[in-house]
Image 1 (cartoon, rainbow, N blue to C red):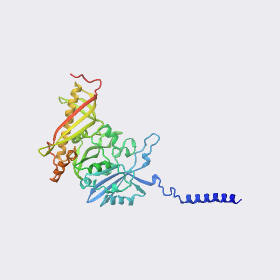
Image 2: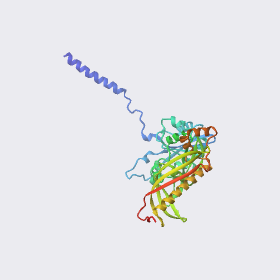
Image 3: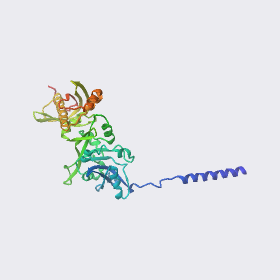
Image 4: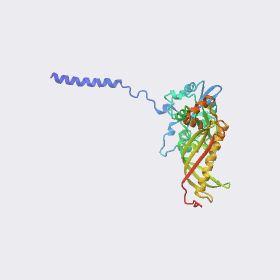
Amino acid sequence: MNKMKWHINFKYLKLLFSLMIVSLLCGCWDIKEIENINYVTAIGIDYEDKKYVLYAQLLDFTAVAKTETGKSDKPAQVWVGKAKGETVHLAMNSLYATSQERTSWSHVTSIVFSENALKQGGIFNNDLIIRDSKIRLTPWLYGTREPMEKLFVAPAFFNVSPLNTISHEPLQAYLQSSYIPPIRFLAFNSRMNEPASTVLLPNLSITSSVWEKNEKKDAKMYVDGAFSLSEKKLEGWLSRQKLLGIRWGEKDTTHTPLNIAKNGETVAVISLEDPKIRKSVKLVDGKPKFELDIKLTGSVTEILGEVNKDEIEEMAAAKVKKEILTTYQSGMKIQSDLFNLKHVLYKQKTAAWKKMNEMGGMQLDDHSIESVNVNIYLNHAGLKMLPVE
């Protein structure tokens, strides 16, 4: 009998203990619903009147969620906040006074710097982004010469969210047409911390001259050039046309067109990809001389005149070489090492680099590139290609 009593009491004790444990669980008492949080998706940083100006792009996340048809019948709603402060963090805190709800920075996928902010060095004063655990280290980085308010409301196609624009997702557009490569915050910091390294920051712009919607101009974002930065300072801005040679030195180039002209007329268009780049340096009379070896593969996309495969490969190689040297010369005009030749010297002849650095640093000139060797192989020529003569 006593044994049975003890067994029953033990069961009650276990139950009581379980209830006590459950009462200590906090559960989800402080959970916030998605509609009660302001999600910042892009940050813009400007500098004026000796203060930082912070722009925050907010999206209505009901526009992000797909409808049954996959697209909304109404344009996506976008809010742009603006606040000033002596630092970026103080400007950020100024936004909270009018934010109405809790603001989350964990969904930021794009950070854009104005030209003034770049001149001020704002992109290098990124301690807030590194320290603040709420902001990830993976947003895409851009520069711009456009007003931030205008840039942040540029629409995507089909009334979908601005998250479907190149400011938030540039990779797919770049894979289809490789010119100026996009860069993430983490990669930017890594490269800037490398000695004698130059980084190109894509420049976001807006054009209304390409697309129309119901016979009305429809503004769209595009990358029209890049800012060159080195040694934690802005060296200048170059247009996309002046940076055409950059694509041949980027290992991530996957698809980029090249038109082939003969006697002043286009006779073929080819698509080139997968560049294999080797840079080497030697010292001649104490001065560094560089050699670039580039191998490219590709295919013929159009034949418009009488030309054979060997001619196309030869003319394409000559044009690629010309674009590289032209881009290099464009960099020299703003004293920018666009092909990271100084970094090649640092890597391959560290002692010589250190000695030059102690004497004021290495200076590139118009003759620093001694040779550019380009080899192109067309692995698919198509049915219309003329035979080799």
